[in-house]
Length: 241
Image (tube, rainbow, N blue to C red):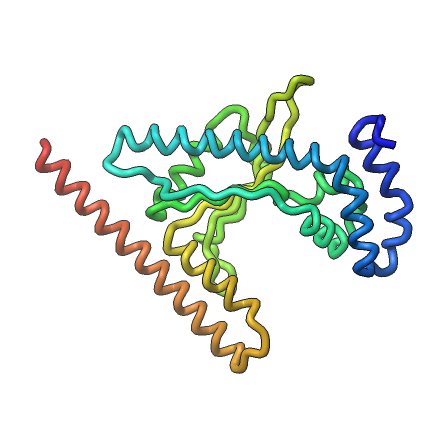
């Protein structure tokens, strides 16, 4: 059954499931889709893992390069993940995306995700520019939630990029979502994510307002810390001269 190409195998195995899933997906149907998708999809997941490796390597090189010209590394940490098959099936179903590899690749652009945590706001844009200046990286979409925060106070820079991976059969372009944010922005986002999914909370509106105010306070701390850093570096440079 899986003797053809990955796309042929995937499409053939899911024709019946696509038809059955048009109206409503039961837990049994969901598990059937996951079982059918796993074998041919494993290769595609590996491709996304390779794309993450490419992007993370580029980011680590940038971090080392920038540290040669300053007293600190702009990147505090890097995290990455490939969406699970179950998460992809859920998202495809909610957005009415056909269960084919072509449709999933075209419409779900966060299957491969990299999160870069920087020390200061200016480091976010330094890393962004360094990554996008590379001639094998193509910017697909950019959303700047730092300059234009979400209504709930969320701040982060989101990039959808295309990067090549090199296989035995040749080059293959892959889509990766890169989120770049400061330590303070990540701290707020992580806690807000936990609180957002708590059920049976009274005074949800007042809690949302409080979270937004905390996001603004966090942004203010980022700005003040950056000003302090620049002051310290300026003093050190003057002493060295």
